[in-house]
Length: 289
Image (tube, rainbow, N blue to C red; front, side, top):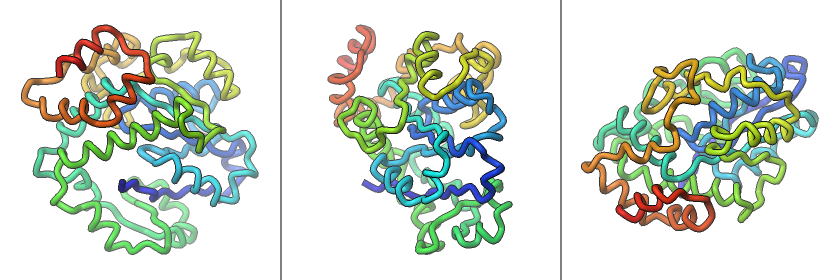
């Protein structure tokens, strides 16, 4: 499996982030921005001035472990926050598919956006730390070739259909870590998006684990990151709890049946059925694929 391990983080001025880091491992379109914002509200850090947020989106947990072990600044910040969140497979895959389908057709590569990016090495960032805030900058280790990195991510031979088995692999790896089948990241607080969305009691338990003070200030806020909601955009801004996020699977169209077949035949589906609580309606839908 080809998991990207390209990520750079370093607190160059310790006084800037007295709380250290906020690491968050999750899949794209898994509601992790919603979880992130609530945790930042609970820890009085909604503007990210206390902890430097590190987005470990779509990262293999074993590679996250290596990243954490290799960065010598991390142990100097004992108040850092570590979170791993997972969304139920059926609604997550539905959201992920339709998000990608809106941006790419089968002839487009999912790395098209990389064409306009500027690639720099870590050593270049250290000389020009202001570049870290530039959204068009991608930072790679000094031992990686810039041209190869860009070519790999703008290869037009990869279709949207080809990418989904890999993203399902990534969900499965995070799900195994979530339920404890693997234990690469024992310091991470495990969060299930569905329960986090539904249950105040569950949110309060997570709040306690990250050392926060519970409030619902941003509970109904629809995060702009990721172009808002896949299906609703910002239509429910201010009333996000009214979104029907747990029944997205009902929005599948007949012409996309091949993707549902791929989902059902992937190892992730069997793992989901055996390890997660599934409603009767969801089970009936899966059986109908």
